[in-house]
Image (cartoon, rainbow, N blue to C red):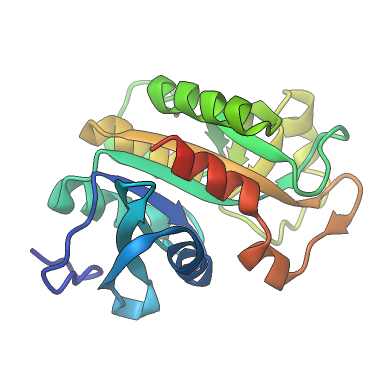
Length: 233
């Protein structure tokens, strides 16, 4: 079965999938961590691969940037390809002073300035949260690997270049750890469709301290979140 955005060519997609935004990061993971790799997608150059990690079958696929994009891919993966566990691995901008470059942030919840939830017609405000089962497994894997993680609320924003440069301060006051652009939509799709989702992030820049990593580092140097996500499968 194929969709407008995923054409597997008959190759399998595993029940558990890692979802980096960058398709080149997806390729890096497949080439450096997986064995017996087969490519299952190249539509729109959004690469997808299935392989094995320590004998366990796992897939990895890029999702692009923003909630509309990950909303499309996660919906199709869950409804058409019966994916059960979706783990976003990506970058984030820290908005708390204690978070440094390359620190790991796990999104227990995902606040948002998006109206993605309006499609559900809910009589209130929905709180997108991670699967506790996946969160627990991620913390277990991080402890086993000796990797410190920061767990809490993140902000999924529709805006990368914000006209109000200080808008993040209001979220900071609420204890939000970092800003990214996808998790809330992933968590909502998973909740609505009966799947499990988690977002594991690496701090790529600090909005507070004005530090940042390079594009190449974001593609290849974020090993810790890759290792946590693979170990927990």
